[in-house]
Amino acid sequence: MNLTIHRGTQEIGGSCVELRTNNTRLLIDFGIPLVTPQKHSFDIKLLNHKSIEDLRKSKILPDIQGLYKNDQKGIDAILLSHSHLDHYGFLKYVNPDIPIYLSEGAKQLIDVSDIFIPFKAGGLNVTVMHKKRKLTIGDFVITPHLVDHSAFDALAFLIEADGKRVFYSGDFRGHGRKGVLFERMTEHPPEDIDCLIMEGSMLGRSKQRYENENEVQKRIEEILKVSDTITFLFASSQNIDRIVSAYKACRRTHSIFVIDIYTAFILDKLRTVSEHIPQFNWKNVRVKFLASHADAMVKHGYRDLLYTYNRRKIDMFEIDRKKDKILMLARDNSVFPSIIKKLTKPKGATIIYSMWEGYLSETFKKYCAEKGIAIEQVHTSGHAPLDDLQAFAHAIDPTVLIPIHTFHGDRFHDLFENVKTLEDDETFTI
Ligand SMILES: [Zn+2]
Ligand SMILES: [Zn+2]
Image 1 (cartoon, helix red, strand yellow):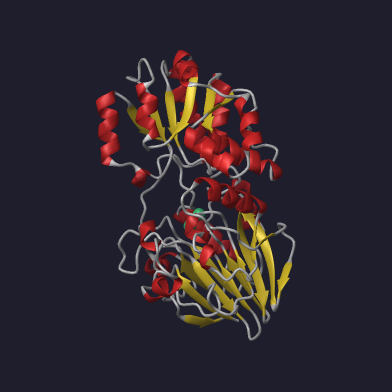
Image 2 (tube, rainbow, N blue to C red):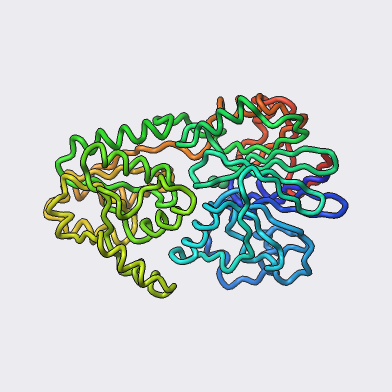
């Protein structure tokens, strides 16, 4: 079996892995990079009005024969580990005859993103994988494993062919709400792994203040307990672990969790995967309507759902009246100042900043300081820290460990055993 990592050996984001036998070609993930080939920060606008040929020439799209819309189909299938754009964002360029395999949760989240975010994956040829059920594609036998990650319903893959066994970790951690999956995997690891392709996002990042999702929930709870005016939560609506933490903190402090239509729709769609995900009509949850979200729902034929969500609608007047009991999901965008303007006393409010701190801009910090709004960072990463990566690699004990999804692949040699670092597009025979 041959392995080629087309992108991801030296960077976080844009992961794209190919496994190949004499008869079958399999691709795993096909995401948008976070950095350009020149290692500048990647702007999605670089994709605007560019043809596939242009993007291939400028090396923004990797040069993979038989993958793209304008090529004859040469890839048998694509496996998708999870619904983060750095793993699926380029699928719209793929030949639609190539089937894409993914989890139910990933499918639902990509469908919702296609309605609300400007970047569209668009009409993918998808098949939902059943967890732990083996799937055969040509020479390959694939077993998906559910993993703990900030993307809901994320998968790792055990892939067998030519008498060899490869394990692709995807993005993972052990300190989220599904941390037990990490424990189980390290206690009962897949055996006889010839090659482990493992992420290393956290190498080079500093130690986290909040070590796990429970601590995040506890801190949100403490903030709500002492708050005498509105509290905002800046978090990704797709980070379901975080939404659950916020919901639970609200339940325990008798606060109202105000979500928007986009979030209500995400939670609604994921009902098919888990009945434990909070819903818009659960106690303590209310929905704030935003015109742009309502327009997007109507445009995509979800007018009826809007009527349903309307039953739990909360307006700014009620939010202002009950402000000391409100946790409102919001974001650093043009809507936020208009919310602040409608409050009688925004001064003293707190923003719980529950995303990667790199997204927090100086301009926004200044705006908040002027308004007397405090920002407190309460976040835990979607990725495993070094000691968990080491425990994981040690448990699997592969013949070869290949780093991916890291800016510090070279450090793997000092930190792990049996490491083989590759260059992008280099082919390695397993
Ligand atoms: Zn990633
Ligand atoms: Zn991810």
